[in-house]
Image 1 (tube, rainbow, N blue to C red):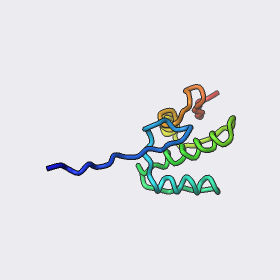
Image 2: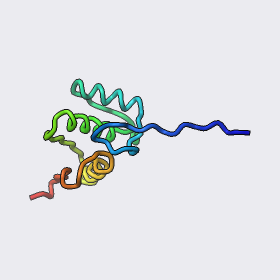
Image 3: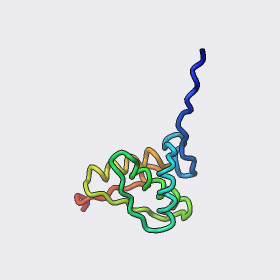
Image 4: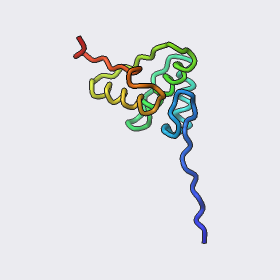
Length: 106
């Protein structure tokens, strides 16, 4: 008897997103599309992908407008550092292209 194959996750395909790293989730995609049209406040429970949504918006803006800059703000230094590492993991950016600025910076 054969077990039906369960399809694996699909991944976001975008020129600025590393291949096979960001799972494609419809609700995130819809939020990203809306955020690219107008100012948007995203309120979701923990672990539902707010950082990924911000990264996907940033990826599209960086792709549309070469040379532009994107600013992500976080309320704590650990969260700012976590965002930087997530951006480096998910987007096709080099370490010297992503900066973290904290209150400790002179």
